[in-house]
Image (cartoon, rainbow, N blue to C red; front, top):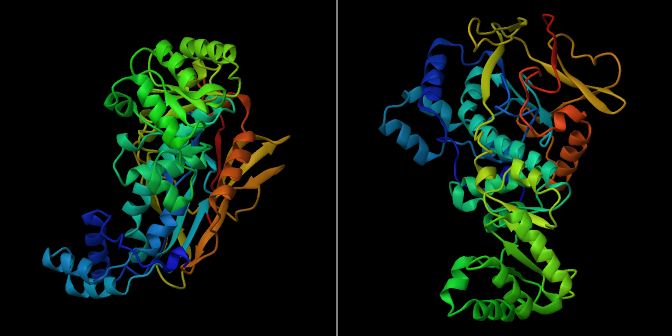
Length: 444
């Protein structure tokens, strides 16, 4: 069954109260039907970032398909007098029948990039604000952190271990966002079931502790899971645990994992001991409060893979992408022009008009983000259009699988200039982003 036809729980109340009170008032005064354009964008990148990664678009599509006001939802709104009876009747027939334009999932974004554009009647579009932001802000924060970790790992696989540090419903979303950005697998089984992401896992310290001694635990794990398993060697003494793992697994042991201590030196010691035992194919997995900076510091150590949890699902200190959802244009009359609107003054000022976006390139390297509100024509020289039509008249037009999304992300990363790939935070003498955002905002 296609996901737009899936019969699953409504997402209609994953929203803020004021979305529906605005709707109620707009239906009363006649502005509900005015054609409007809303844009999702961030005014800046989170501290320390040179680029962001858009993630969550596929999840947003699924959530929009379930944005329905069923009998139970309408009863709640009625019982709590959130909206009037005519508005309840309008909501009963709600379906998003407008247009949704977006950057491809996995694409890189910069300050003011119009990552999602929603076009439709004011009523049908305004009620999507909270849902869109809650999905895109979290997923994009995780993907942005994950992309930097993938870069720091320098080709070595990364495993997502963050479930226990996230809300239970956020955990599979985080696993998906990390996978978009290049992680190899997740420990979260729901993410595996829901999204087809490879899952991995063997044992934790509790399994060793429940046994009478470490050798007994290792023998039990090998007997149950086979010699290709990964033995966790740092429950007591890492060096002694390694020796016992070598004895329990022998030359065919799949991997050892070190979860604490001095990870770099311990990995070097483990590699020497494994090689001395003829276990050249036994891999070394490191985990334990890793982030992109610690991964970069482990660049020369003989680790074969890394497990990352807390810093990933919390967005590596930035659990939101700081996206906002703003009205940028509206049509006063059905036969009138689409007019730009904006908020003026202060740090929350906006730029009116629907934007088109292009990535200007030179010899295959990204030079600038070019935004236009006029005719949407491409800038001079080599440029790549960033937006695609996802929904048109409410019908799905763009729905790539995760493999396609991952490939697009990797291609976008490969376009980055060297300055944007640096892991250290931008200095005072640098721009906030390595790629400037240029405007050609002639009135439509």
